[in-house]
Image (cartoon, rainbow over all chains, first blue to last red; front, side):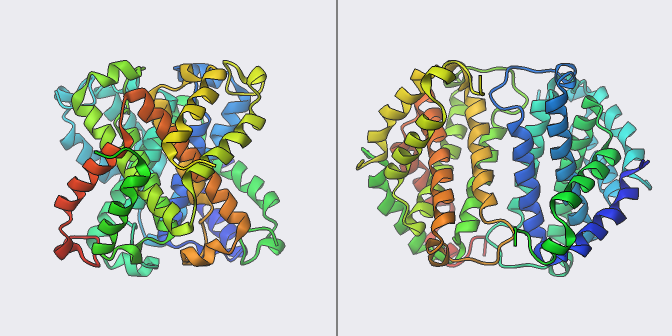
Length: 115
Length: 115
Length: 115
Length: 115
């Protein structure tokens, strides 16, 4: 059991280190890996009609596929952030503040585009 | 200051709720959003020669762009995981175990492909 | 006016040559460029309800955006194929034959996945 | 043998029609399919050192993988353009003219970014 993403990070870094994969993990390569995993995630939903979260949650097989792809994306995101010294919680907070300015809640309630 | 990704999640969900954006956030759409943000991350590295993490870290302008895209990817990943009931730390641990079986450290040391 | 994609290829190559951009166009970079443009194409459809082709065709503004992204993807595809000596019409025919074997019409009529 | 991409289009449309796949091919889905195939193309180059086109051309196995992915991308691009009434050769020419204005050859010779 793990109680936070951060508590898993040392195990991810150790996994990588044991395989000496740091040499492959240039930031550009990690960005590409994230994009490839994100496409694999998309593929699980391709050609399918409008599915809500609750519909998908009943499909154990696809839920496991989704879970694996989500983990893959997050693993590469953690490697990239580690290597570039990005503090993920702080990056989230800073982006949230930018977004709050960019999308004032009054104007963007129920819409994604400019009124 | 935030000490964990999880501690930011309630603020992300509140931001979304205030704008009533849950209606747009079908899992398939969130997967697409992750993929689009991942491409924007890749774009920061496009057409550039081999750059190491330490080279990139000296470029404050690009570091900010990277930080923003990394946050965007993580935000959508957190929304998707929240909506589908995926426990991210546990998903990481499970995937790490699968990877440890798939890539035994003796065989994959210094290589990404089968020996 | 142009009557075929192939008839435009020399002009694309000349455009590239005048700017001496061949030096940036390693196959890997071109593959990344295709993926980035494909994400920009996806972005035009993000967060939107089920839209048919005829609905989209009435929206001149978005049609122009789509047209531009489609052209960008095709331009990089032509550069990549040119550089690697891939005959695009022949590649299409060969893939069509593989697909005809992989997806027999009787079994896959009206379905995308195995029966 | 085919002498142009356009001459293969009717066979692609027939392949699709025999399987009644038009129902799945909303423009948004086709855009996603292009993006997924583009990521599969990228995967062929992942974790690899700087490879020139001539290096890759000697690797028959990877060349076949590349050829297949390039064809997949082009197939979905042709479907999308067909469905939306986009004239691909003309879209190429129009985009080339926009690019010629955006990237004057004197300023962008040997550089991809603003001087």
